[in-house]
Figure 1: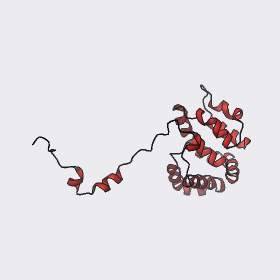
Figure 2: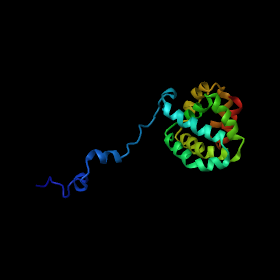
Figure 3: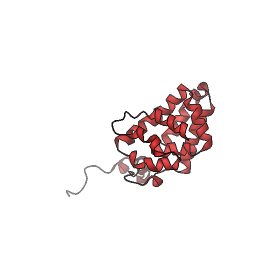
Figure 4: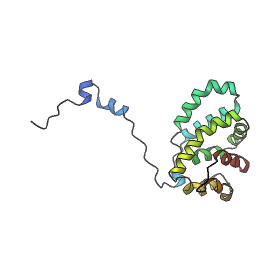
Length: 172
């Protein structure tokens, strides 16, 4: 008598199957606590999204990019789960995208848009202390001497991420 709920479950009240309700609920991805760098998520689909973003930014002018802005933001949200160093390695391990990075960083508008997406992600990972542990593997993956980029990750540094990416462009 006292076990009965005062109201039936929402699925019964709404006359909606539980499976449909379960699809609405978003389950957060597993936290990547102390996962080795080579096991950080970066699928072929993620690389395809990164490639499309960088290629679009590199090959198009400002007016075209304004028209494609919504699509680029959608692509960016699809790869929001990527660790920023994996994002950068997917760019700097591809010779075509390296060329596009030069084009992107030569243009204030493109560079600012790119850094508006990357900068906060790097800041978030730096606050969590999840950059330095991957720095050596990242440097090895993109064939850059660790000493050349380590200064951008030092504690107390204001983290000039734009200068960091400029340096990667120079080195790779």
